[in-house]
Length: 200
Image (cartoon, rainbow, N blue to C red; front, side, top):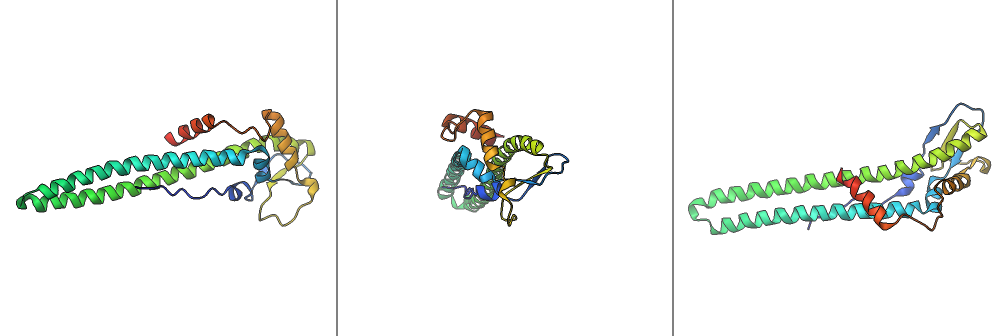
């Protein structure tokens, strides 16, 4: 049975990757926010993982259905080949070989498409989260008259704790959404969003 290998979720590389958002002109020092710490504090890393796991399962189910349908077609053609007379045997064998090649190509193409969908969905989840963070972080930057916000990651060797606004961003997001870190999105909401995104 065909399986889709979407890959292990690596939120660190997306959330902690270097990047900056220019807010507005100002004279203050750049500010730093740890996106991975924000995601963990709000339980968003778990929510994104759940959504991606569900998406991967849905894609695997789709691949299984396609694989089963192709297997039925191949078995039917194999049965036809076994029952064919010597006169029609060569023709039936050629048709069987062509069908087998076509089925393999279709499976590979479907798997590639499924992998692309999974990657796009993962990127969509991360981009949505980064945008939510940016909206809150922008207000903090304006208050401090800072012109730039950067995300902490491997490219940042050192920075003063005074420019780290991670805790402020967490507090702002909690206040904005009126949520606590131990209240993640419901499974039904996760399933609806994953299904909607993968259907496109």
